[in-house]
Amino acid sequence: MRRWLLAALLALVALPAAAQTDRPIRVIMPLAAGSAVDVVVRIVAERMGETLGQRLAIENMTGASGMIGMRTGARAAPDGLTLLAVNDAVLTMLPNMNAQAGYDPLRDFAPIGQIVRIRWALVAHPSFPATSVAGLIEAARARPGQIDYASGGAGSPQHVAMEMFLQAAGLRMNHISYRGATPALTAVTAGQVPVGFFGLPTPNAFVRDGQLRLLGTAGPARIDTFPDAPTIAETVPGFTFHTWGAFLAPAGTPAPIVARINTALREAVAHPPVRSRLEQLGYEVVGNTPEAFTAALAGDHATMGALIRSAGITAE
Image (tube, rainbow, N blue to C red; front, top):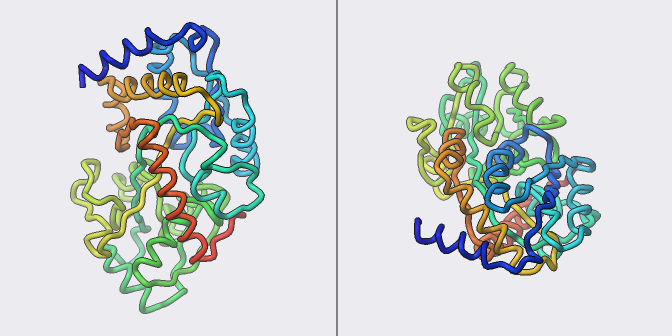
């Protein structure tokens, strides 16, 4: 790791002067302030700015479910002075639901690198009889289509995650749509809706306080944050679900500039204070290459497209 960091930093110094400037880098974020990726990006941005010698100026642009921010970023000059910080929903979910999104996630951007993977969990209000994934499956099979679950809106990651679980388990439940993940989580915490699927660490404090029951996590293995919580895959073999946060540049951004920013990203997530903070919040640190991110994006886009079509999911 030390050898890689030294080589990467030397590469930064060797870049042509045209690729380096003290002008701030505008980071368009088509997500709300305080969202999971917003928090992650603000943690890594300061360290990246130190490495690049440029401040990263984050601009939340949430209009039209993030489509305005994505279109703005796609049309920006490919000079390394405009980036996008995104979650996978605006790349793999929304364009598969809305033909009028106004951008092509696979052609209009230059992938820089994934920052983190976001772990997900299936939770229930303590008054709900089921205390496990198996219990939820049993209850849903006994009352098909009658048990409610909450999401942050039609086509939201919470909706997609639950539909993916329902397909894998062969279940039907009733979707209750809210305007955002926070009101959906509030509804489950208050007992207005019994069940929901949410990205960590959003429900963590409620689980620890006993206001929510953690039925199962959606990764391939149990997680350190809740080591006693089983994975959903222990009951529904092969089931996993995660989302991620990443950096993009407009398509056409020169490869040396993409490499320079990727180097700064990878150095930032390897920096012990940054990595420790991300892991404390429950994120899985990634920091991959542009090539690895490009492959992951293509695969996730295809997988989500197939799921969305088969489940008939449309965006609000």
